[in-house]
Image (cartoon, rainbow, N blue to C red; front, side, top):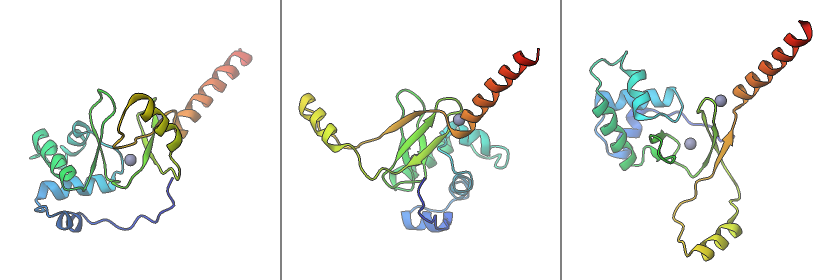
Length: 160
Ligand SMILES: [Zn+2]
Ligand SMILES: [Zn+2]
């Protein structure tokens, strides 16, 4: 986790700085993403926001996210064939992915293993433009659930 003090983000200011017209939908989507800091997919956002914003369409969500990415407000994250996720954190960082619940956590690496990458580039004649490191596993919550679950099971068998 970064210890960087997260300064207050106001949708209107962000849109203004990005040169985007602050339409109701844009402000609402951005405000939602600031309040609910997650790496949302367009589909998830649409389903979460539809209740409070009945005029919202999936196409609007897609178009808004696209405009946000193009103006540098969001970063689009792609994971293989899975749907893109959108990250409000546009500074260079990497992710820890929980394979159980899908939660993504931002990590900042002081040192990326550059030697190893340069060697791989040489071997494969590859020109790296961007480095995305993903750690896969279980988040704290899912890990604890799993531990609790297995100890419950052990208790159950000893009690029986
Ligand atoms: Zn999890
Ligand atoms: Zn992130």
